[in-house]
Length: 368
Ligand SMILES: Nc1ncnc2c1ncn2[C@@H]1O[C@H](COP(=O)(O)OP(=O)(O)OP(=O)(O)O)[C@@H](O)[C@H]1O
Ligand SMILES: [Mg+2]
Image (cartoon, rainbow, N blue to C red; front, side, top):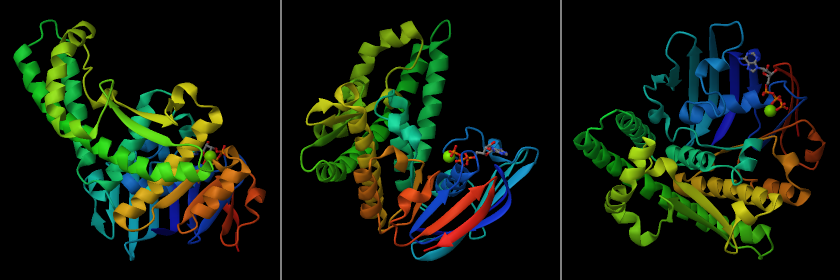
């Protein structure tokens, strides 16, 4: 996949700007707060129709304006595509791909695949499970039509169940009907996540061995309801959940919250058997995330037959020279966008565009 160019109208700190890209590496540089990450956000929007950082769409509209428009030309599956997103303060967000309106975000799935790696991911292992779940959900949503809908249906059921549990007198019959619905979606989500994690693990193991000179074996496990999911149990999850719900019922009634289900699940990273969250050094944790991101790229390549777009936001300065070289060499077959404040570290690049951003404008663009 390749992004040829992107145009912004009243998007973030961009008033009216068109930026053309290199098919290989694009180094977007400039001082802090000039609009580098905003460019990556604009590209990211075309993957699932949502921003990677704004919780509300209208945050992306330039201050004082009533709407924002982003146009992007990109190549996917050897076809040239023209995408348009209009975000309005009052009207519904409009997404059009090749003149065809996209009615639901799920219809965007597969049009443009993106792997995003920014500083916020560096704490992925250290922090709570929410971010880890969100990361895999974003990845799976881009690969699997239907997953996005399943997640949103599941969320509705858990919200409904939580509301019910908060009522003074809980209708137990309604609760068991809701639980059955919940088990159905939960079993699907857990199975899909487990299978995804095992595919990522297989690729990540090779990369981790490579990056550690054969010393470190990485394992990734999907933990559901506090227990590691095994291949043998993945097809009986609905029954397992039903069984567990009997024990958890008392706790759910006590805390008046929906406790059982994949909205509480986690992913565990281990190096040579020990838990990275508890025992890994900061460097080891960072490396494991880098390895996971590289594995995501390779998984996309395997599943959809072409490389996704890689967005590296301010991440290279976090990696030592060895890891930086590894990233640049390993990923030379795909289009990469790198933001940084100091372009000097990319002097050795043989091909690419250097795009200087200042106050929401392209100040300079050099192609080598
Ligand atoms: N809705 C908006 N309207 C106008 N300006 C905005 C809007 N949202 C963000 N900005 C501005 O965009 C700038 C930040 O852009 P961005 O995050 O892309 O910076 P950056 O170049 O990546 O900086 P850093 O190097 O610190 O990461 C800030 O000046 C901010 O005030
Ligand atoms: Mg930034």
